[in-house]
Amino acid sequence: MPANAPLSVRLLQGNVKQDIKFEQEGIDAAIKMYQQMIVEKPADLIVTPETAIAVMIQELPEPFAVAIRQFSDTTGSAVLFGAVGASVTPEGRYVDYTNSLYGVTPHSRDIYHYDKHHLVPFGEFIPWGFRWFVDLMKMPLGDFARGAPVQKPFLVHNQPVMADICYEDLFGEEIAATIRNNPQPPGVLVNVTNLAWFGDTIALDQHLQIARMRALETGRPMLRATNTGMTAAIDAHGRVLGQLKPFTIGSLDLRIEGTSGFTPYVTSGNNVVLAVSLVLLAFGFAFGPALRRRNGSKAGDDRNV
Image (cartoon, rainbow, N blue to C red):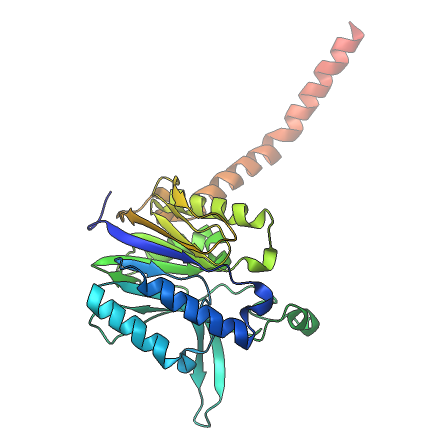
């Protein structure tokens, strides 16, 4: 059922080429571009793609930070942007890197923080013997720390919004558990991603289909802010309300309404599916041999006629 007032949202797509995304020139250009895109127009919620600001949060350029803070305070806009998190040792070294999202809300100095939990091999942790692949793909960071399985939502005008990063939305059970086990269950889901690694392939359409399935399972709208596509808004019934053309720079502006309550999938996750599968498997083992013998006997009788 609907929950809280509808939100105006802006989902940004920067189309930053992967081969320059982590080069200093590309980082500087992306920060300048996303700053301009964010402050271009107010909305209740503005979302950038995954690692849109490809620097450590401790090294966030001051002009960007000041511009976003002033814009949020003067327009009432909440901003959720992707960056790299890290802890700092007493010696000043960065450790425990995280693929993260940071949220700025109007007139609040509290910064929202979400760390990706379900990490991807090679991109976010390096299996033994594959350092060469990470170097080939120009990934300056390959070993990340994991966020908690259940993290607090980002509150936007009293609407709890739950983020996930990249292919975390592939795991429906984890999304359902985040809603089920959260003290403040989110009414809107947000996925941010960077699929520039995959180029112009079926991966973009595939990921959109995955997001639509998560919306259906949870009964929540899903917002997607991506680097190259598919940036889209999906309602709680899995219908695409709008999307940007892939490999373009732009902003998808629309209104979305959150929902409340638990679907059967949110309540039980994969347990019902697994239980039904086990019952059918047991049925097959119990009655399958007898059915095969009976069918074989019947076929023999038919041949003798």
